[in-house]
Image 1: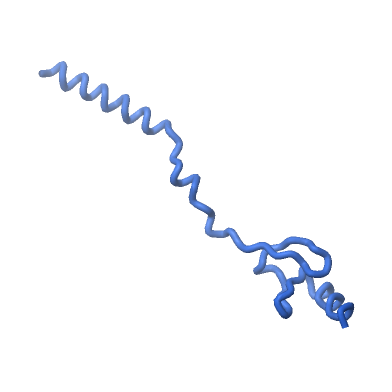
Image 2: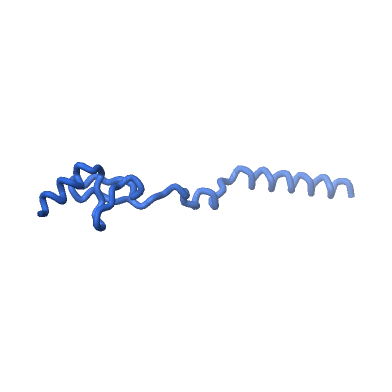
Length: 75
Protein backbone atom coordinates (compact mmCIF):
# COMPACT_ATOMS: atom_id res chain seq x y z
CA UNK A 1 0.00 0.00 0.00
CA UNK A 2 2.88 2.36 0.76
CA UNK A 3 4.42 1.79 -2.67
CA UNK A 4 1.12 2.63 -4.37
CA UNK A 5 0.87 5.97 -2.57
CA UNK A 6 4.53 6.70 -3.37
CA UNK A 7 4.04 6.05 -7.11
CA UNK A 8 0.82 8.03 -7.13
CA UNK A 9 2.60 11.02 -5.57
CA UNK A 10 5.42 10.74 -8.14
CA UNK A 11 2.86 10.65 -10.99
CA UNK A 12 1.05 13.73 -9.62
CA UNK A 13 4.39 15.56 -9.25
CA UNK A 14 5.38 14.76 -12.86
CA UNK A 15 1.95 15.83 -14.12
CA UNK A 16 2.19 19.12 -12.19
CA UNK A 17 5.71 19.81 -13.56
CA UNK A 18 4.60 19.22 -17.15
CA UNK A 19 1.53 21.45 -16.76
CA UNK A 20 3.51 24.28 -15.18
CA UNK A 21 6.01 24.42 -18.06
CA UNK A 22 3.39 24.76 -20.83
CA UNK A 23 2.64 28.37 -21.90
CA UNK A 24 -0.78 29.63 -21.00
CA UNK A 25 -2.52 30.29 -24.31
CA UNK A 26 -5.60 31.99 -22.89
CA UNK A 27 -3.55 34.92 -21.64
CA UNK A 28 -1.72 35.32 -24.97
CA UNK A 29 -4.94 35.40 -27.00
CA UNK A 30 -6.54 38.23 -25.03
CA UNK A 31 -6.30 41.59 -26.80
CA UNK A 32 -5.04 44.48 -24.75
CA UNK A 33 -7.79 46.86 -23.65
CA UNK A 34 -5.69 49.85 -24.66
CA UNK A 35 -6.06 49.09 -28.38
CA UNK A 36 -7.65 52.06 -30.17
CA UNK A 37 -8.95 52.73 -33.64
CA UNK A 38 -6.44 54.27 -36.01
CA UNK A 39 -7.31 57.06 -38.45
CA UNK A 40 -5.24 58.95 -40.98
CA UNK A 41 -4.93 62.69 -41.47
CA UNK A 42 -7.03 63.87 -44.44
CA UNK A 43 -4.30 66.36 -45.36
CA UNK A 44 -0.96 64.54 -45.00
CA UNK A 45 -2.05 60.90 -44.56
CA UNK A 46 -0.20 60.25 -41.30
CA UNK A 47 -1.82 57.58 -39.06
CA UNK A 48 -2.64 58.33 -35.44
CA UNK A 49 -5.02 57.13 -32.76
CA UNK A 50 -8.58 58.38 -32.95
CA UNK A 51 -8.31 59.92 -29.47
CA UNK A 52 -5.33 62.07 -30.57
CA UNK A 53 -6.86 63.15 -33.89
CA UNK A 54 -8.78 66.36 -34.48
CA UNK A 55 -12.26 65.58 -35.84
CA UNK A 56 -13.87 68.03 -38.23
CA UNK A 57 -17.00 66.96 -40.17
CA UNK A 58 -16.02 63.25 -40.16
CA UNK A 59 -12.50 64.07 -41.39
CA UNK A 60 -9.54 63.52 -39.10
CA UNK A 61 -6.42 65.66 -38.88
CA UNK A 62 -3.13 65.34 -37.02
CA UNK A 63 -3.00 69.04 -36.06
CA UNK A 64 -5.01 72.26 -36.27
CA UNK A 65 -2.78 73.60 -39.03
CA UNK A 66 -3.64 70.69 -41.35
CA UNK A 67 -7.31 71.11 -40.52
CA UNK A 68 -7.22 74.78 -41.57
CA UNK A 69 -5.14 74.06 -44.68
CA UNK A 70 -7.53 71.32 -45.79
CA UNK A 71 -10.60 73.50 -45.25
CA UNK A 72 -9.03 76.47 -47.07
CA UNK A 73 -7.87 74.34 -50.01
CA UNK A 74 -11.32 72.83 -50.56
CA UNK A 75 -13.07 76.23 -50.59
